[in-house]
Image 1 (cartoon, rainbow, N blue to C red):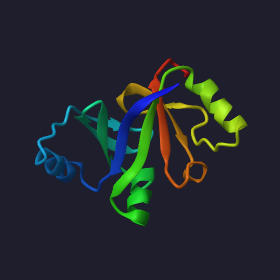
Image 2: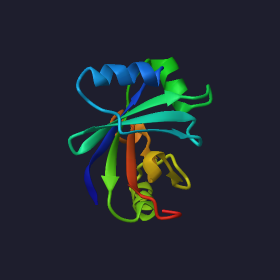
Image 3: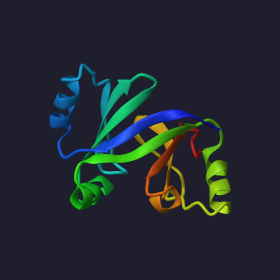
Image 4: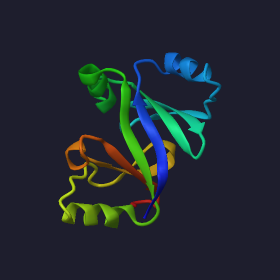
Length: 137
């Protein structure tokens, strides 16, 4: 079951410059980490029950680098928190014709299991499903 918006992912060229902009709004950074599998550095900014996730590419092979090159900085995805077996839910979505992108589901930022749904299946929006990591989720 989807219970909340977990975060909004924003692609940025420079994490440091973006952090300063969000600090001017009175927001604070709680954590910065690198996700080697996705070739990004990530900064987390809590905002109510959700977070803003700033994503800076660390390589030209990063999906975020390709996104910025094609579309510029901006909203990259919306992440929804899923309580339950993310692998089974992904299989259910695929059975319904929804195109998922992570096979197998991987461990993403903040130590969570992640699955992306292709924008073509969601009206042009890249949707990320996040759940608690359970080893193989």
